[in-house]
Length: 257
Image 1 (cartoon, rainbow, N blue to C red):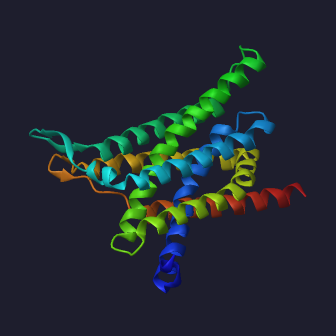
Image 2 (image 1 turned 180 degrees about the horizontal axis):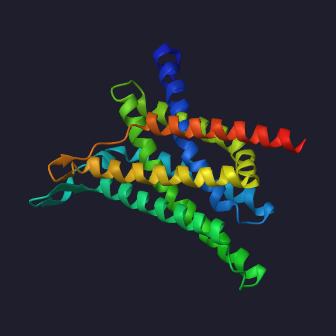
Image 3 (image 1 turned 180 degrees about the vertical axis):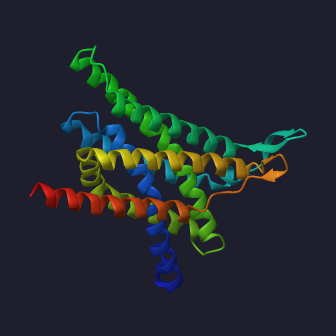
């Protein structure tokens, strides 16, 4: 492992690991929401399974990175008077993933606001929820892994030992997230306002994935090309909202005392 004796390798590894953790926050938020309905003894298990699957998907995609890059080729081209797009495999995955996030987030918000009817027995609900939770985590892991791998490939392009650096960064970042995922999940599910914020963030992320998919497909609507939303803007909005909510929580706690 001569590459790990070079300073550039460590700089790239630390930077990529940090970015993987930042990108993985989306995944943790979704997993926290998805596992919130499970019994407490099952939540940690489901969270760990979700993050392990995310790590496996990322490594598999990295090993097949040449195929992943080839998915930029257009599968279908549409050219009309008001719409122009070249649909690719990458754009389809991001677009479908964004729609799934929008659907999941809005349906969860609906359940939180309107309340759920408990017609089924408790045992049946838990079994069904556990199965659905695993399926949902697997689906969203694929989408987030896809986005994460594209970022990693772009960052390490031309770097010596790029594949080794990317796989190491993925494993390290996932181990770190596994340490903090359960405390974060408990905190999110314990505070209804934080949970609602998290669901709102997922709506933003879903919309971002849809626009990014349209951008990769070079979509133009009414002569206006759709551009990708910079992730920095999104994460700033999330951090700002969490900061305001932290102040609100502090004020409410002081009033209660």
